[in-house]
Length: 409
Image 1 (tube, rainbow, N blue to C red):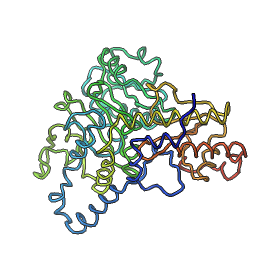
Image 2 (image 1 turned 90 degrees about the horizontal axis):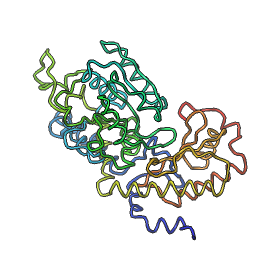
Image 3 (image 1 turned 60 degrees about the vertical axis):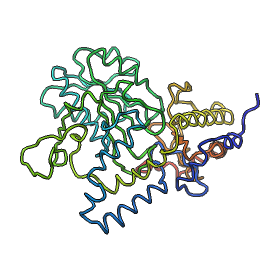
Image 4 (image 1 turned 45 degrees about the horizontal axis):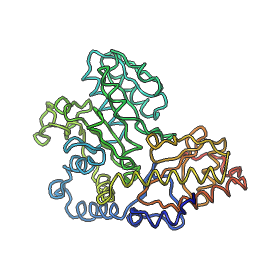
C-alpha cells in the first residue's frame, strides 16, 4: 500500500486553519506543547484588555464591573466541557500542586477511618512531594503507599482512603484507563483523584461518567494558558456539599465582604477558593480557551493519533534500531506525545533545538515530543524527522555544547 504523503494529509486536515490562532516563530517546529503551549492571538488580546482597560482604567471598580471576582467559577464553567464535567463543578485557581493538596485533604476527611494514600511509583515527583506533605500534616497517622500500575489492585485494601494517579504518564505518554481504574478503586471503598495535567485539551475526557471523585489539571500545557497559568480542580457533584478547604481564606468565605472573624465556607465548588484570583493569569487562560470554541475534541484526538503514528513510522523507517520507543503503540493507551529512549537523549534534544525543532528531555534518557493538533502539521513532522536524521548521521549530539545541562530540560 502506498503511504499517504505529508502534503496529502495536510490538505485533508480539518484542523489546518487552527494554526493561524497561534503565534509560532517562522521556521520553528514546536513539539513541546505538552510542557508549555504557545501564545494565541486571543490570549494576547484578552491580557491587553485586562491590563490596559480593566486595570488601567477601571482600577478597583473592575472587581465588579469586569467580573474579576467571578473569574475562577466562570472560567471553570468554560473549561468543564473539555473534561466532561457538569456546570459548577470546576474551579480555576491556585497551582496544580496546591489543588492536589486540597483534594487529598478532602478525600482523607471523607474517609476518616482509613489511613493510606496509594499512588503510582512512576508518578510525577511533585505529586509524591505533596502527598507526603499532606500525610505529614494530617492529624491522624497517614501512610503513602507507592505501587506499580500493574499491581494497583493488590495495593488496595480496607485501609486505603484515596488513590492519586496521573492520567497520562509524563515520561512515556501512556494513557491510563480512567473508568476501569476508578471502578476498581471504588470497589474497595476508596476515593479516586486524577491528575489531568497531560490529558486536558489533548484527549476527550469524561470525569463524571468515568468515576473521578476529584481531578485537577494545569492550564499551561495543551490549554496554552501561559507559563505558570492557573490550574483547575473538579469535584464530583455528590461531594460538593461536603467540600472543605484545609487552606481557608477570605474569598472562600460564604460572605467575604462581611469581614467575619469566624470562617463559614462558601457553598459548592467556591469553597476551594483561598485568596484573590490572579486576574492577568486568568485572563490569559480565558483568551487561550477561545481556541477550543469551534473544534471537536474527537477531531483533536483523531489528528493526534495520526500525527503520532506518522512520527513513529518515520523515525523507525528512517532510523531503524537507533531508538527504543517508550510510548505505547496501542491507540487506547497512547496520549498525545511520543517518547524515545536513547543514551544520548539530552544531546539529541539540544541539537534538534539548535536546528529549530523543539522537544524536551526527561531524565535519565528520554527524548520527549509533544503533538498538539491545533497548530502542528504533518509536514512539520516530516521536516522534524529529517532534522533528527541529520543529528544522528553527523553525531551532532556529541558536541560539547550540548553536554552542559540547562536548569530546565
